[in-house]
Every structure is written in structure tokens, then in C-alpha cells.
Length: 146
Image: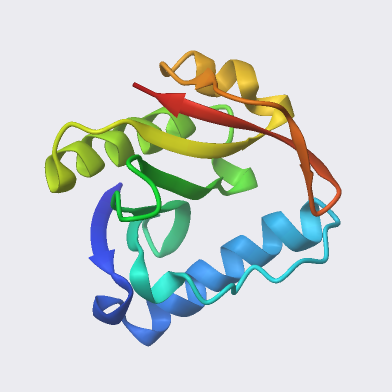
């Protein structure tokens, strides 16, 4: 497994395509959720890609704390269906959290979790930090790692 942490502008055209395809395959097609995944935020994010052979199988994007939010933000967390149930999601999140702490110092990390994944994120140290909400027809919870 090869891991890379990159700015959007540092990703090759092939890598950008693979990211968009994986996100589309899971978030739009598999979850039957028509929403604007390409939201304009990718150019300002950092991207963690996990590649197995030639296949992108794990991905997340992260944003540093800024004037609007004191927390770093992790989002678009995804593991390809072919690699689920292997512990790769936990590894992805641990690597993402470690990279965020390394890049931006010790800061809380916030994420918008699909509600059915509350236990998964809770096992990684994230706690619900507000009321649940609907995002594109899918129940979500705000979660934060201190």
C-alpha cells in the first residue's frame, strides 16, 4: 500500500481522475445520492490517497484551522468496496489524523459523519459535538476529536 499526502495542484491528472471516480462511485452511485461532490473546495484541501497496486482504495481530504473554524477538518473519507472490512478505514483515519497534527500542530479535528458510522469514528476518539442533521438525504452527525 502506498500513501501520499498532496495539495490538489500536486496531483497528476490521473490521480485527480481516480479521486473523482472513487468519490462518485461510492458517494453518488453506491449511496444513490445525487449531490455536487465537486464542490470547489478541493483546490484548498490536502489530500491523502491510499493506492494498492494501481487502484486508489482509500482517500480523505483535510483542511487546516482557519478564521472561520479553530478545528482542522477531515472529510470525504472513503474506502473502496473491495477493501472494506480489512481495517483500512481505521488506518486511513489514523494516518489522516496524524498528518493533520503534524502539518498544523495539535488542534481538534472536526468531521461530518454519516450517522451509521458513529461507532466507527467513536472508536477512533471522535465524539458527537452537536445535533444530527440531514445532508443530501443522509443523516449526519458533527463529530470532533479533541
